[in-house]
Length: 518
View 1: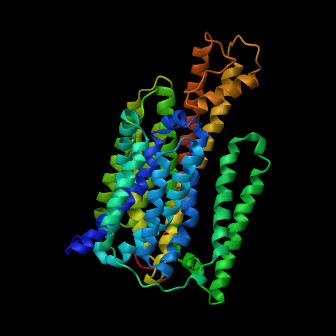
View 2: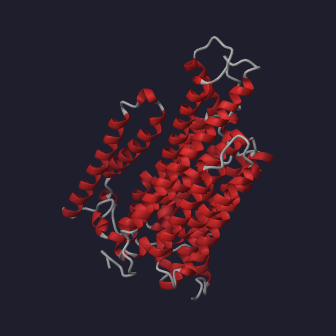
View 3: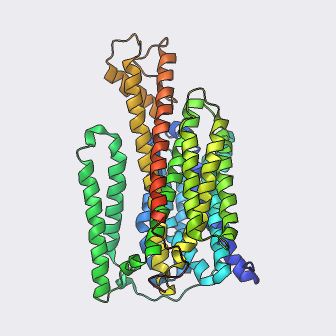
C-alpha cells in the first residue's frame, strides 16, 4: 500500500487535518486531569465541571449535522476556517476564565461550536482527497492521531497544570490553531451545491432541543428532588428527535433539502456503526472522567502524576488504532470490533475491584492497558467502516451523523457514568455515616450533605462545619470508602454499556460490500 503524500499537497492535507483533530481531542483530556485545579481556581465543584464537559460535547453533537450541511452551502474550506476562528476565540476565552461560567462560554460553547464546524470537514477532506487503500490509511491516521491526542493530552495538561497553570493548555491549543490557519492554503475548496434558504433552521432547533433535553435529564438524575421531572425532560427530548426525523423525511419527500437524508439509516452498516461509535465514546469518556476524580481525591496525586497513570491506556489505544489498520487487510473489520469490545470488557472487570483508600495509583495500569487495547481495536475500524458503507453523494450527511454520534457518546458518557459515580457516592456516605461515631449535634442527613459537598470539591474546600477536628480522620475514611465503592459501580456501568456495543456490532454485516447508497 502506498502512503498518501506522493505529492506535497496530499501530504499537507493529511497533516493539517491531523493537527486539527489533535487539538480537538486533547481539549477534553487536558481538562480531565485538571479537575482538581479547576475546582480550586474557579471555586466550583466536580458536578459543575462534569456539566461543562458534557455541555461541550453536547454543543458539538447538536450542531455537528448543521456543520456538515453548511459545507454544501459555503464549501468545506470556508466552514472549516469559520470553525477554526470560533475555536480560537473559545480557547482564548477559556484561558482567561475566572469562574465556571466564563469557562462554560469559552470552552463548552465557543469551542464546541467551532469544533462542530471543523470536525465534519476533516472527514470530507479525507474522503475527497484519498481513495481505496490510501483512504483507509488516512482514516487510520485520523483515528490514530485521535488516540494520540488522548495519550498526550493528559500528560500535556497534567504537566502544565502541576508546574504552571491549566490556562497554558488552552494557550497551547491557540498556537496550534494559528499554525493550522497559516497552512490552510493546502486545503481544497468544494463547490457549493445548496443555498442558505435551503438550511432547515427549525430542524436544527429540534435537534438541539432533543439532544440537549436528554443530556439535561441524565445530569439532573443526581438531584433526588428533581427525579419527578426527569421522565418529562427525557420524554421531551425523545419527542423532539422523533419530530426531527419525521420533518427530515417530509422535507425529502417534498423535494426540499433536509439536514440529513434519513434514507441513510436504511443502511444497516451505517446505522449499526453509529451505534457502536456512541457506545465506544460513552465508555472512553466515562473512564477519562472518573479515573482522575478518584486518583486526585482519594490517593491525592497531582495532575501530572494522574496523566502519567493514564498514559499507558492511551498509548495502548494509539498503538492498536494504528496497527489494526494493517490487521484489517487480513481480518474482517467487524471481527476486530467484536474482539475490541470483548477485550475492553475484560479491562473494566479487572479495574472494578482495585479501588480503595490504600490503592497505589500504579494498580490502575494493567486493567486500563487492557481496556485501551480493546478500545484501540474498535477505534481503528468503526469510522472507515461506517463512512465507507455510504455513497459519495451521502458523504456530508454521513460524516455529520457519525461525528454527532461520537460527540453524543462523549456527552452521554460524562453524564451517565458521572451520575452513577455521584449517586453511588451519596449512597456510600449514608451507609458510612449511619455506622459512624461522630460526636456532633447535627443529624445524619446534615452530616451527609456536608460530606457530599466536601467530596464534590475533591476535599479541597473547608472541612465540614459540623465535623470536629477529632472526627476528621473518620470522615475522610468514609469519603474515601464511598468514592471507592462508587468507582466499582461506575465500572460495572461501563461494562454493561460495552456489552451493548458488542451486541450492536453483530448488526454490522460481516461482508465488506457497500450497502444502501452504493
